[in-house]
Image (cartoon, rainbow, N blue to C red; front, side):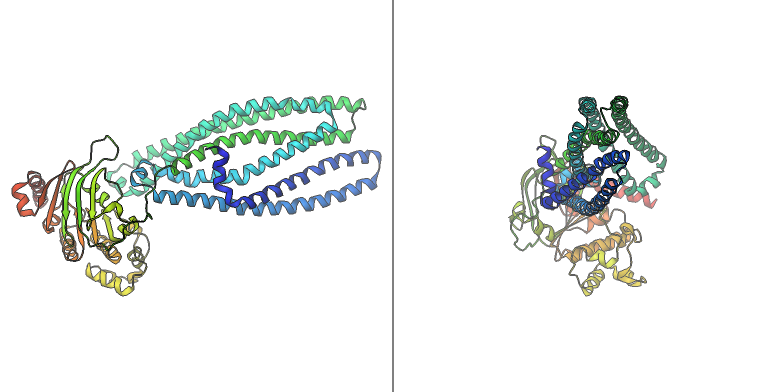
Length: 577
């Protein structure tokens, strides 16, 4: 897509406001150029001793001053308003797009890249529209008017001044290539840096426990040093560009001073005309320099547009697509399900066939990498199966409206997030219509009400950053309570008891067993208490379903299950000893 068409996508809804800003800018610039000519005539009238004409022109200057500054105020207010609107619009589109990304695509994008696009690239685009385009318009108007006037004032001096144009164009083109290269590199480095910072903050506890602060600090230093090096290269490039432009302008001015002095001495030019010519030449040179600097800004804009458009090219989840909205009872049927993250890659799930009846409690076990979590991700349609079909109550899952599906399925992971807000706000976040009576009822059901009731602020107590004020068992209970307030028919759990003590785990399992009377519960687990609590156990190995039965049958007939169970028994024995 051409750069102009790309920009139109972002400002077409503000076209009228944008045109108004450009008109005000143009009028202000024209007014700003008039005093230069008036000053030239004032000098000539002073030399002639005509004070009346000098006074008249001072009045003109006062009127122009008032008009110019009035337009300037209007321009500033309109520009700020326009910039904020365009920036917010771009950011809103980026956030909406990110929220609709398919999970596989989201996993391929660095967190830092999304942050850079949201905060940096969006600002580059909006600033270009509200600042660079008006500045270019102002510079163009200044160049046209100044060129007309310097040609009118002195053709000979103008010819000398115009020699710098082709040289400046070549310089700008060459410098622009380097700027684009360093801008692309700078964005990539910024992506990596922000991704690292986010990881460092989210994994702070692990960093402390592993005592790798020095390694993290060295990585941080390397990252900021790379950014500093790239900034230095960009600054040097811009410095060279400015130096060459300044040198060219200065050489031109030096020649004009000498030649202009000769013209004045020989009566070919008046002092006032020379003063006016020099003033307009200065405006002409400065504006010409800004026009060529504009090319450098265009290179940065192109990089930002490419990055934003690359994000928008990702396929979206069909979240609001029309589909079945029949009442979900909770039966899950898998028919020949296979899945791989990329085509022609080794499948993570291979030809799974499974029936999970409604109102049941099944546990999935298997070694790391066997596809347990991937199966849950497919059931909630974070990923799309490569082959086969999934039926919910005999309805193909792909035909069910995605929003409706996720309203009836809850997925709680080991690292599910609790927000740093009140307990009540956390619990009702999935169902804003939850009454206080219902919240208390659910909390009693999962055994957390007594603890909450003992707090000074009870349900209005702040929960702490991701539940840091809670024990593992309390956090798990709150997560289950939050899920129940949403009242889904299907509940998926991924290792939610893996970090709990034995008694807390037993308590949670008892809660889940009771919930399975009215909900379909599917849980990934590996610890004995969780395994033994299930009605049936799904055993997976390298993406294959190798066992599906109750514990007392699997322990006799399924080698993979026997190995997993024996490993848990041995680990438990070591802890006891």
